[in-house]
Image (cartoon, rainbow, N blue to C red; front, side):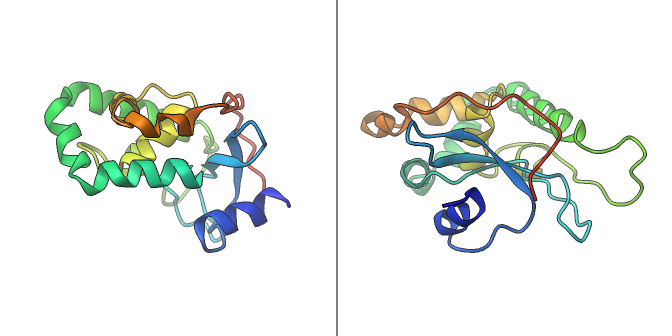
Length: 164
């Protein structure tokens, strides 16, 4: 099965734009995708990294369901969260041509400028090789679900080419 078909199966709908798989299971199944900064029609795509691995999505969802977003904000230094947003935005912006005219994606992790919006996006950013204190906080809380990380292949090198 090709990556596009498999990601569609994992997320339950066709992907909205171009992406490449940057983290896989040992068996080669997609876990994290890196989205192009724009959809095909030019609409900005602020979510650069998206968690698609079924087991890990479920595990992180359980943390969110018990108030993980608010708790992470309470537990973590706001400056460190802001640092994760800034790094995410800077990495995404390297994929946008310098001469681009028109709307651009904005914000950091998942389009957020401050605080925490989605633990899944922070975990995806961390697994893709980004420094992300919220992703680290989330993974530390997986407890018995931590086995969902066993055998993940390291992230692909950051490149600016994204498959259609």
